[in-house]
Length: 152
Image (cartoon, rainbow, N blue to C red):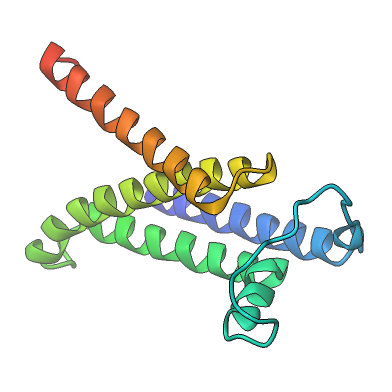
């Protein structure tokens, strides 16, 4: 039964990879929006952040990072549910690693998504960072409230 699940996961991963390569090669990413706010202040045009910015805007790099993250989560999940061939200490440590990794991804997604949406609406960097932090604080308060009520 486990072999079937692994095989289906592999096939879906290959389909996702083929779909990603197909979509990134279509040329639709050359579309430009004219209403994006231009950054103000900051470093010069030749600063070290420009290479990182190019890498962050490249869909191929983002696809490779996503694939590596997915493979990493998959490897830790296999270690977590692994049978007798995997040492017990590794299997016991994989559960907290999965939980910590998932929480890190969710928190980063919420913060960056809020920050990016706020910047897209014309807010300054500090205001967008405040809004992202506020969302994370609200999530923390909701977690504490659910814990006090006994639902978490």
